[in-house]
Length: 173
Image 1 (cartoon, rainbow, N blue to C red):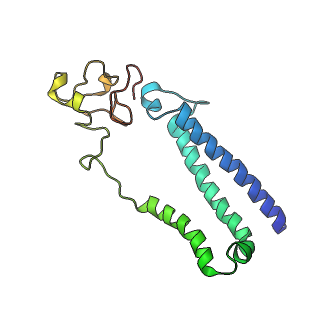
Image 2: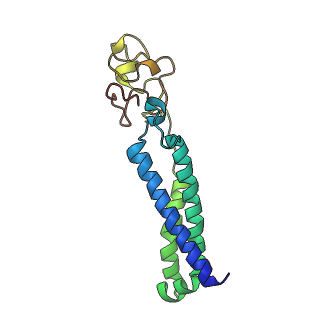
Image 3: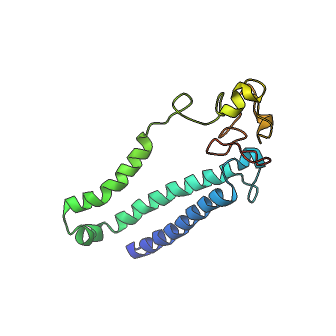
């Protein structure tokens, strides 16, 4: 296959994959919000939010690989025109992308005890302190009443939205 044909194929698949990554991201954000797997059991075409997230991740990895292939196919143009045959311009264009990827891999992850407000004992002051009738019990009206207890819930803190506030009755975050 000629170089021009490879370029057209890579560009077409890049367009399709970029569209699919955007579509799955929008689907997860707007149609299958966090908490939809455990609390509401929502799915699209039989796939849960977690399943769509896995597909989103895999398509994203393939998209990055094809973007690298696209850059390799256009290397001469990048060197001659975009960077004006100056190595520092090429480095200035590539460095931010490499830095973002490295930052995502190296950023510290915190957990309970590090200011994390996720699931676990004490995740919600209203439910884990004596006010609700006992240690680890849900406050009446908390959407996650059945999920509270010794384990303190699951996910983002059962009965709470992502901010740590009590979720409205019946949402089951």
